[in-house]
Amino acid sequence: MTTADLKAPRPIDRSDGEVTWFDKRVDAMLSLITGQAKGPYDPELHKRAVEFYAEYEDPSRSYAESWLLAIRAVLVEQGTLNETEIDARLDAVRQKVGG
Image 1 (tube, rainbow, N blue to C red):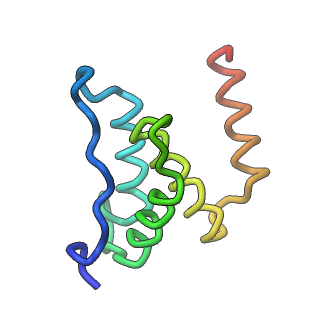
Image 2 (tube, helix red, strand yellow):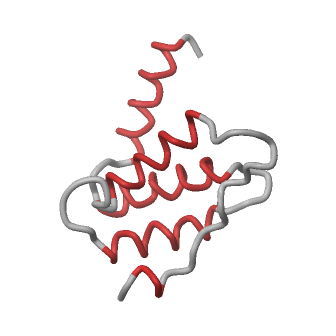
């Protein structure tokens, strides 16, 4: 399987301005978990992320929000983190930023 075989997600919509810091962070996380940023590229992992993205894509969400849900699903599927660990880490971040 090559990356050409994968369904490409919708592009970031730049019609309302620049790509946000949040968009860039999500793209960086995706690159890390699929091995694009460092180490061997894992086309199977990328395929799963794209499949999850398609599952979570919704016009009411931003591109980055859909990818973030896909990344979460990949991490849980792989056993890297479980839902409880993710929620605990999110709570810790929320407390730090006062939200």
